[in-house]
Image (cartoon, one colour):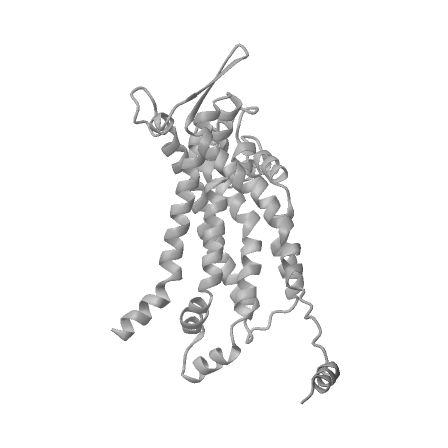
Length: 329
């Protein structure tokens, strides 16, 4: 074939158009999130670890910052002589109030979600019930704290009614009782968040294949067996998400205890410092310009939250894999 013929053939061949890709658009859309996350989450976290190793002293306007190493951790944990382990005390307060609110929250949310998604009962007005269930979640923490503090004060209407009914003693005061105050804070947390948990569980239950319930009914399973043998195992991912988010939020509890039964802005939860949480302790140290120790407590809270989350993931997330390994063995 001559050179002219080769040129003619090559000229008649259609040229491949350059492929246009739009893959980078996705990176462009998620870029703002990562920028905000790096600026407002990652950098403050790294800076907190750095400040936990420093000692900040402000004497009459003369600021001195020195390297403190791990001494701040020893002070907070009560290892250093003369230092009290307030961190463990406030962590215990936090855990007690969180568990007191979370246990009834998850139980009642499961019952309501199972009731609303039951195809046999077919509850009417589900939309209105869901709205009423979720409404406490949209009320501000300050409003709820002030409301409950007024209702359960020594001469509040609910306290007066309970005294009149003989439920509590005439000289009883919820705000002077450790159990009473902790119980009210736990109830507020339950009342505020059970609606959110209910909607999450409803979404999880609606995602379960109805044929599984039909098969269980054909095999003779009753309502309780269908709930415990079908619903709960398939709800495990939603329950894990609920547990982890509740644990993270509970360990970082601040707004309700800091507004419910405190004097001014002292960040001391009455009575007898029994409702002071870890985050309130951090704010107390921060306001006293003890930035190093406040950072130490923040780092310890981060470590505790991480450990609890990993334990929950280990216990609930890998159970299926463990069963498969045992079955293969």
